[in-house]
Image (cartoon, rainbow, N blue to C red):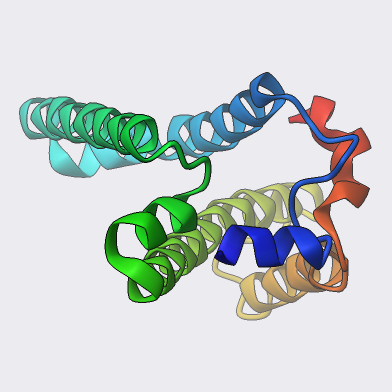
Length: 169
């Protein structure tokens, strides 16, 4: 099983571990943080009526997908997405679920990085009294965010090192 392989390598499933509630709070804080930061501009571009309809529709889809995930977990008695995929569709199912999760998480990290760099660029421009259209401002801020925030996190062998910082989320 894919989840078991990751646990054996020490990449997931820490023995001291986090509780389910800690995981829920961390995911909620991450999703809500980016959502709250990007919602006003999305509504601005989509308009009040279309934006509200899209929010309601996406909420319904999210609710349906969560219902389906919980139901699949109950029926299969599995606890991870790859394990549910393997139970239902074999090794190919586990691989496909892992691939879809990878693409989803990659897209979410890009979205978060865009929000962070836009906010950082505006903050740096304000602090240094620079124009937002300064030709070197955005590339320097993006480079700084990658070097200071992203690169050190890539080097971590195990995410349990970040456990003390979870309360900051």
